[in-house]
Length: 305
Image 1 (cartoon, helix red, strand yellow):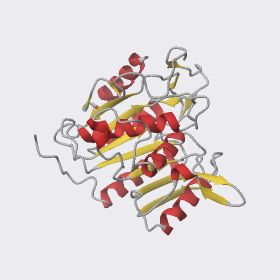
Image 2 (cartoon, rainbow, N blue to C red):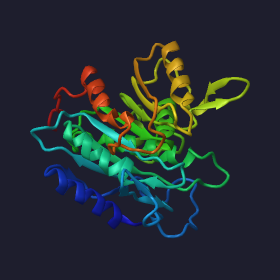
Image 3 (cartoon, rainbow, N blue to C red):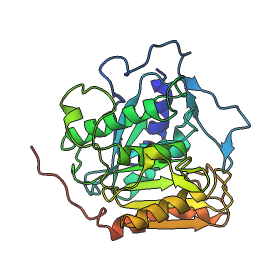
Image 4 (cartoon, rainbow, N blue to C red):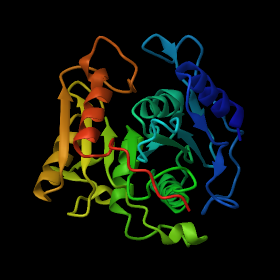
């Protein structure tokens, strides 16, 4: 497990913002992850020097993850609102854009008083299983751990959202749909608590809508009245197709789920929250406004145990 990459990435951001503290990565599973039989090459960064850049800066493209972890990145106590967001980077279920859509997101969350919980879920796709199946198990397990240990982490267990990019956005939508029951045999008490996010933020999500004779929401991302309040962002020129958020927004509206949708004319895909000339990259300001309007940024710390 290449924890030095994650530790370095988190450490650099803690220094750059001058505050915040992160836990050591916590293994999500006490033993082997369910359904995994091993055989992957060592975990590592597959980015190509001089090629894999976003906004003029390199990115980490982590692959061969067989030991999923979560890392809690907390704001300083005087800024802590008690709200947390569990972060799922994208990467087509083949790699994880660990800094662009992970550690940098935790930095931003800390800046608005929110605890970021970075989940390093299993990639690449496991043969013979749906692309999202192993990551969904990791997501459900991670969410249960965070909620069951919320007070330990300085988090209000009723104020835990989820944020995902691209494939991670699909994963968050699937997590919200599959929150009624685990997709693996229960391991311990963490699997007895709800894994439903209290709100979800989907940034250029992929494969939520699937074409048949007409677009429909993918079954694993089905919307019901129990779907949590949702914030959506995508660019109209995204090659992953803006219909993913448009169709999902229509489904949310039909189910009377509170939502906010932002579609920008340009921005393409995979920009994370690095500012470029495209206004799509200002989405963190809009998301912070939305979270504020929903009351998530009002301080509400849990009672000490």
